Amino acid sequence: MKLFADGGIAGRKVLITGAARGIGAVLARQLHAKGASVALLGVEPEQLAEVAAECGDAPWRYCDVGDFAQVERVVATLVAELGGLDVVVANAGIAKQLALIGGDPSILEETLTVNVLGVYYTLRAAGPYICHPGGYVLIVSSLAAAVNLPLAGAYSASKAAAEALGHTLRNEIRHTGAKVGIAYFAELDTDMTTRGFGTAAAREILGRSTVSGVAPLGPAIDGIERAIARRKRQTVSPWWVSIVLPFRPIAQYVIDIALRRGVAVALEIARTEDAPFTTDQPARPRRMERPA
Image 1 (cartoon, one colour):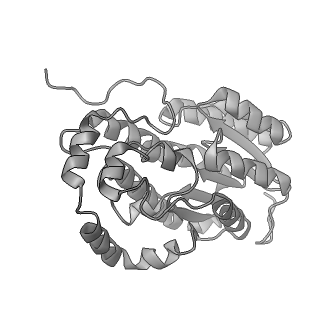
Image 2 (cartoon, one colour):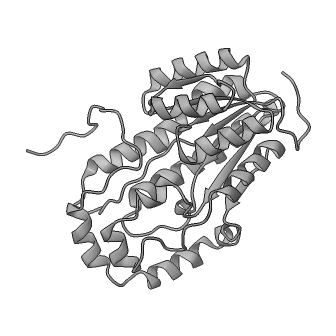
Image 3 (tube, helix red, strand yellow):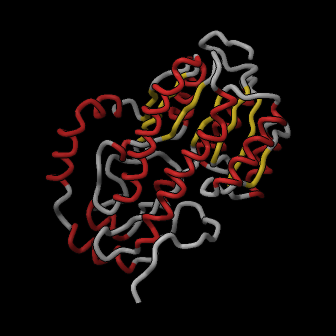
């Protein structure tokens, strides 16, 4: 495997999940422009084809990251088309509000399927190819893994689990020379924010659609690029997330006090509000039996 001096992007072979839109699509374009070879997967074929065309006709495949066999097959195919693999960005993720009591259990099931099992399946499939000096894994977690908001329990739990997978994998593959990084983002200008939590229930709690305000996507993408180039342990956006992370208990206490108003009403709204997932998902068998 070719070794890269930390700081370079050109020549790296990068696999990106959830590459049809948002972080994945913008990242693919930027890495391609810097000389990387990218391969893309996701569940929106038309958008994926457009992004791939803008990335020098990059290889791409439809892939449901919640389907183990499909991930194994697609990752092997894309790596073969790339001619190897240096970096995998486990970016695919979904969000949808959920009242933990009285909400629809399938929301939690679907969120964990994509955001946790999807990350694990991706790491398992790509792992043999990136376990070399110069190899790198970046898992897109969230500030929600550290600070938990009402109605975001499914998303927060999934991102905390993804974070734990990243920390574990770092120790398991260190001896190979590969490294693992985790990205922690607050509310960025993507569908994850506007479609996932820009709801009537959220506004009842916050008095607006977001907690911290929507941050531009550009700095986050630049941060991911630097993380890949230097194989960094962590990247954040906006910058202040790096200050919050070491003080998780304090930040959670502040949130607990600040967001008391409107929670009871918001929960009632959330139980019946027709809020969509941030990305439409393939039909899957339900994992739990429902009482009659």
